Image 1 (cartoon, rainbow, N blue to C red):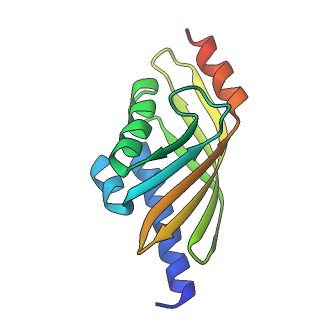
Image 2 (tube, helix red, strand yellow; image 1 turned 180 degrees about the vertical axis):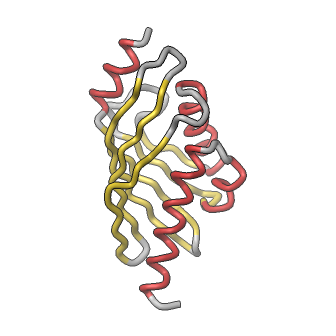
Length: 141
């Protein structure tokens, strides 16, 4: 497969990742990630998310749990603002918007760096405005 086709396929998988999170599609997420997936979240994030996590099932369940327990189903959207691919790496800048049951609107910006091996997402490094997230969630309690 040419590098251009490989990069295009990797970008499609990254797009599927965001769709899978928004639609809480655990089965599809598990199809597109490597069993030994890693997920690195800024140290300034709230526990249990801060730090590096290992294993596809654990990570997918953590991500879906965080979204599903926090936001109304059908309101989560990661708008992709920019996506670039270089070999086995895809970088996506996104704007996540979602709504809580109370009506509060979440609106935060992220950068995800996806690493690919054997046609699957093998690593995710997430960069997010943790101060915004902490303020948003602490104000909701």
